[in-house]
Image (cartoon, rainbow, N blue to C red; front, side, top):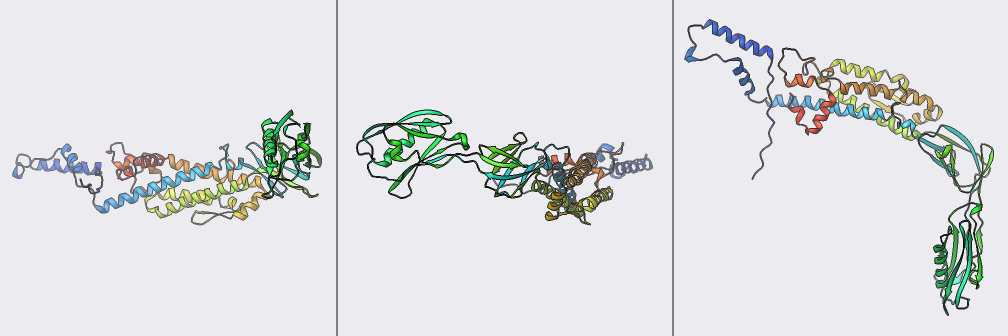
Length: 449
């Protein structure tokens, strides 16, 4: 079966009270003038109900009328979507939003190669000075380099050794078979150490295809995390060289605001764990500055996004100005232009066409020098984001007659007027229109004109 050709949905024509009253009046006058004479060809004057029925049965609008409907509907749809985008972008900087961009704190280090860090929500703004004197290290033992396929220099039978760590002490046993090779014995030794689960990890290193050695490393750093291996029955530890300490365990040492401090790890917690620092290398006498505060890049991204949505809204208003109320257009321009003096101080330019542009370098400089001022300009209760957000929220919740051009959208619904689609539209909000537009996949607006 072939598909039906696409066609416009039927639309009810606008029934204007004045037109209907005029038609009824003319019909009444004709009735009086022809009283007693009868109408030609036995014609009967239509009743009011018949006039309404005829109006409803009129042909659909012309193609020109349909194009006009599409333009108005498209203008309102674009306005609704753009206004909604601005509201969402403004909320990301609103002081009433506990998760706004200014609450996203970060750690900035004068040399991230020496000290880096992160901060979680709730960390307070602060600055500390730090010099890294020594990094924390975990003990590592590296055994002797042995020939992989050579027979191990041990008597056949069980060989026991003691593994003593910060987590406990165990005696481990490795059975050695006659003529067993070094690679096989070291594999069994490493497995026994790992299965003991005492906070150390044993691995095999094979620097060349024909050599092998055992390496044992503590899973924790710090001087308290040391370990030892001692032969109990046999010579396994001595023959393999597993007791040889290649790196001693040690604590990290650093100066924090001039106070010498020790740490078993290179991961430091400040402000009750809300600030986490990582010591990466010795600073060699150079003091680092660690600052905790709002994430400049997160704020810049949020401001840039807000500027983009406002600019898009300004373009839509400009392109569809003929369908919008002059008062609304003027109010929008006044609201945006009023932000010009304060925004230009933080690197945001308000253009004459009500679009916004962000100078990223200027914004970063202003943020680095005076973060409190930037927050006051952008995200305070009287800041740009709050004022823009309030404006677009009022637009979304106001009747469409608030910003629709009066020649297309009636300003108010007369008490005696028949509720035409235009008048019904005028009494609804833009947010309701947007919701219905999305829900009905574009059919709602076209059916309202």
